[in-house]
Length: 219
Image (tube, rainbow, N blue to C red; front, side, top):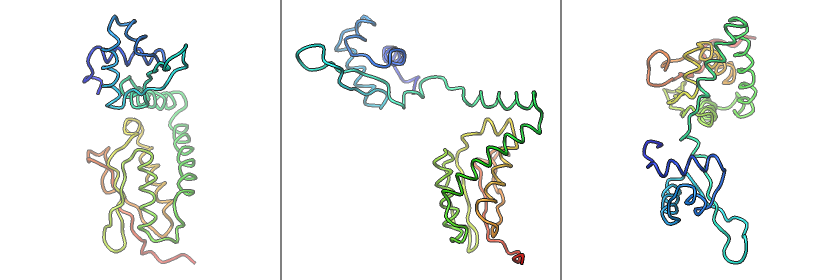
């Protein structure tokens, strides 16, 4: 979206990022533009959800001035290196503390995920489709664009069309293995979970077949 903004609109967005909010006359004075021109730019930015308006404290009689500020959507216009930072941190842990310590960090993350998933998922006595469906909802809320797809009488596919931690997963394969084991734990002892597609292996997505186990119960 950033490359679709005119130079004037880009400067307005950058200025609002610096000052948090400003009126059209304040922006016009700073850029040497007319109030009307700035308002037109602001309204165009508002139409695509990048800025929004609110009434400022009145300075005297008359209508209070309108202050403009960026929306959360506008954050996507600015550089974001959180993925790079994660990769750098994983590399630093591996270099400074070794693979064993890196594994402990991954295990700690998995334990926190497991606790959250167990709170969100239905009881393991519920039908398999219900368990996998709820897990797909939780994963979608985390950015994985997941869905559950029926796959025969006794199995369901958990399909994740996006991986928000792809950069980190490429740098540390233990993250993918950790998530596979996590699914196995939270979905119940009566199921088998196998990965059938893997983004890191060149597939377009990650997919997991969740099947009811045919192994006899342990007494």
